[in-house]
Length: 239
Image 1 (spheres, helix red, strand yellow):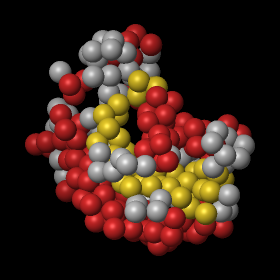
Image 2 (cartoon, rainbow, N blue to C red):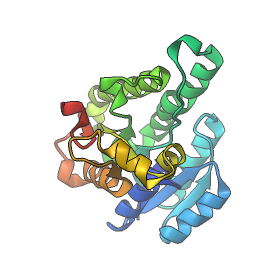
Image 3 (cartoon, rainbow, N blue to C red):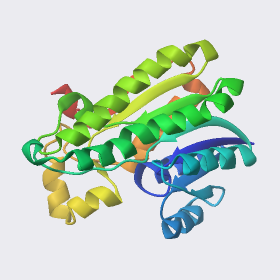
């Protein structure tokens, strides 16, 4: 049985990705910090496996990778864990910046490094999750944009470095997506509709729409695709 390790796999884009790969008969190993969310994720994706862990903790990352290997053959990695925080650039503190980097960038790097020995054996695939902010910036959230820009650059570099192993590395750059995190920021339908009006397609995206792109990039159908940045943003960055 093949497995895919998904950080941030218990909600939002990560959970939708778990459902997508499970539909293809792959076991999603869903890494997350919250046990209650983990239990709910396993109910939503019955063939999935929950592993508790924080991507900023090396021991947790190693345990998650071992769990993926214990349940089958690891063939893919999705780094969907992330944090979003708004703060004017002139008011930033380095402590806060370092926390964001630890989750969004260093967590991605920890996971990729730990999965390398397994992915080399099967010519596997990595899909990292950045943001449209990586290419367009984000007023009031410059640190977030910087972390996601770093993820995108890291992914492209990794694709070149790991091509000798047959490992494909791609990065998705979502716009605003209807997830629990987005709903916390925009709790009413009216607010989400106003947000969606900023997009050429007139709405925000769904987690399933991003997951479909991730699932494609993990699959053999994308066998000649690596080093790519896939915007899933309703045309926002094309303006």
